[in-house]
Length: 346
Image (cartoon, rainbow, N blue to C red; front, side, top):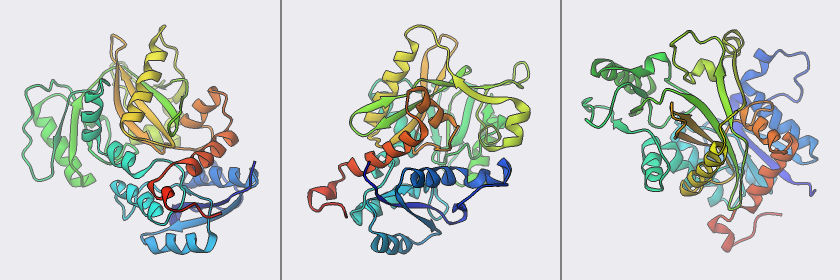
């Protein structure tokens, strides 16, 4: 394996120390992903430079000029506090003629807009819940084709921001209240989609042109009360104490014959038609008849060791070190438009 110069681009407040010896899970939770990636790249023998970015692209330009990386390992999920700006960072890397890991700008743009992505997927025969978008400043008038209960969330934010049990609404009054909450507290347009009450299953996908889909994993919460809906709130995804107390876990999904193959086929179809590259996690819901609905495509999924994406890769025979190396290789191999004019730095 060839040693590479790798510039790891991350948020300034998430730059990890060189060692986590003596630290608790809670102490390292905020920057655990960054630590896992950086330490693994070093273990693989690469030359690693950590770059903490605040809100200036000039910092990226200076680092690229100084390091001349073979690839930038992109770990930014927002810029200027806006999740929808993450695609502009990789666009800037392309303008600098620099390889990067993860998804390309077009794929990020399409996937981050939950309404646009659903329109594209519907056209390509990937089943999604019926939905309606409520822009900020507009009146909340529900379309007659939508049937309650509805699930209300931000049209563009990730990481379950703004999602709680109150996100499920059963009437027009509750819908208006929740839409206004998203407008005011999250600061984006809201999307309301028909709530699919059933199992939640994730399928990881890796690749640019040639795709590998990982075995499906299922979210379960042992501590749910009878009748309480299964939803991936912010607590479920990120609160370690809550996860332990509520019995939140994901594991290999035991599915009926043929369903795994269908999910893999749909995940790859969605990945291609949203123009994704690098890696992503596709989030499905199975209704009472085991029909799959794609809820969201999540490019640049969480890479923490031992979490969903890494565990599903492991189930496919790709160990964590191999996964990180594959992402580096995919980033270098991605055929960005600038490559027809000039070669990458070497």
